[in-house]
Image (cartoon, rainbow, N blue to C red; front, side, top):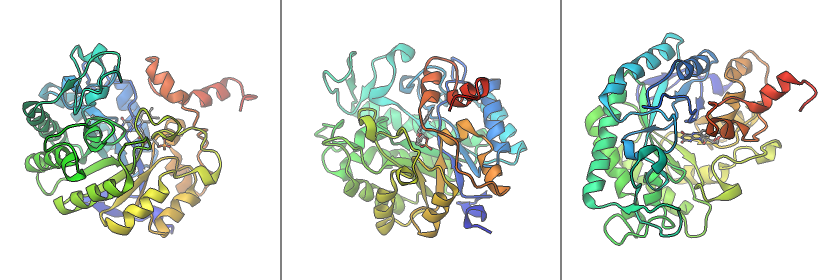
Length: 372
Ligand SMILES: Cc1cc2nc3c(=O)[nH]c(=O)nc-3n(C[C@H](O)[C@H](O)[C@H](O)COP(=O)(O)O)c2cc1C
């Protein structure tokens, strides 16, 4: 049997295969951040489709950290009952589900939060509306917010928590010399820029305990001039390893990285797949915690090779599961044709229009089979 369907454990969480549904904002939560029946149904179909671990879309840990409309929330105890139902539905299908906790920082959306976004630095001129540089008090409150949100995840029955420290959200902003111009102990050398993530990590460990799976998603590089570089992200990986992280999901790119962002288009040829594989290889040479690789993985054979060659332990995908929630069951049944996702990103724009995520290309083809 292929190594991709071997059972593994991440800090006690048993996984039936090495495939992960990468965190995916769906725009399907209610206005207050609670799960809707449509969102629960989407996650139920993913669990039925055989993916080993589902990571939710980023859930905002405080109201001022919300990135967009209809985003899942984890900012209040009042959300726990809805989250409990969501988790129960996934568990009933034999799935595993991890809550991604996040604060959007600079990229919080003042139209939905009604407040001035907080950030490591104000970055005058980069956004239309002003940003507020975080004080030490703000930093302490954010750390507490992450700890409380993670505790809610545990109370709601999630199998683990993933800290979102990638793609230019708050914790990734602190890593990035492009977005972090601080001169205090949270800016400058990488040990300082990673301080907030480590403090968040410790706060969460302190509340959920050592036996609870705790993951981080982080950038390998920002792919912008003056941004986070691989050498520094490897240092962060080592720091997380020392702290006792259970797995790292490696990604890359900021919202300003253009075609080198986290959600790259046109992944049709095999050579374009797994677009952070070189970074993962370098990371692997130094950091030995379980590594989840994301970004443009589309073929079973590519996935298998990545694991066999020791580049990654787990393969994470987002867009292929929007197109085919049962991709893993299809592969398991022996139909090894690659994902039919064309990486056109129309799913993202549909969600931004308020339609919720779905495969726009797939729907178009259903309505008109002539269309490719
Ligand atoms: C619609 C959509 C929503 C996303 N939302 C999140 C998110 O909430 N958190 C996150 O870390 N990444 C998010 N991503 C990025 C994905 O997790 C993943 O890193 C990226 O799409 C590359 O993987 P893929 O090529 O398999 O799609 C999102 C991507 C898409 C397409």
